[in-house]
Amino acid sequence: MILCSTLLHKNNLKQRLLWGVILVYLAFILQYSVFSSTGELRGIRLTITPWFLKDSGFHESVILIAFVNMCLYIPYGYMLLSRIHKKYKYIVGCCIIVLSSVIMEALQYIFSTGITSLEDSIANITGGILGVILYGIVHVRKKLKKISHYKNFKSIST
Image (cartoon, rainbow, N blue to C red; front, side, top):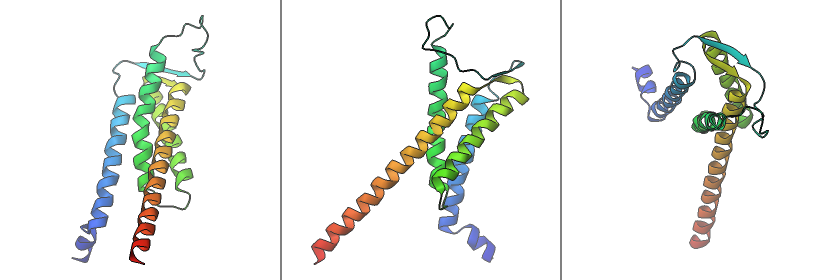
C-alpha cells in the first residue's frame, strides 16, 4: 500500500511521465536515424565533406541532413537537461548527448542500416548542445523573473 502511494505520488508520477517522454523521443530518433533504412548499407566515413570547396563533389543534401540531425537533437538536449538534478548537470547532460550520438552511429554500423559518419555525430552533438544552451537560457530567465517578481512584491509590501 505504501509502495502504491509512493508510485502514484504527484511529483513521482510527473517525473516518470517526463522520463517516459524522453525515452519515447529517443526511440523516435533511433527509428529515424538507425532503423529507417531497409537496405544493406554499411560503412564508416570519418572525413568531413569540404562543402566550402567548389570541386569537392558536394551536394546540398549534406547540409539538409546535418540540419535535420541538429533539429532532432535540440529537443532531446533540452528535455534531458530538464530531468537531470545534479550539481554538474550541464556537463553530465553534454556527456550523455555525446554518448547517445556515438551509440546511434555505432548501431547504424552494427545493423548495416547506414553509413556511420563523423558529420552526423557532429551535427547530433551540436543540436544536443544547442538544446542544453536553450535550456540554460530559459532556466536563467525563469530565475530572473522570479527574483524580479519577489523584489517587486517585497517593495509593495513595505
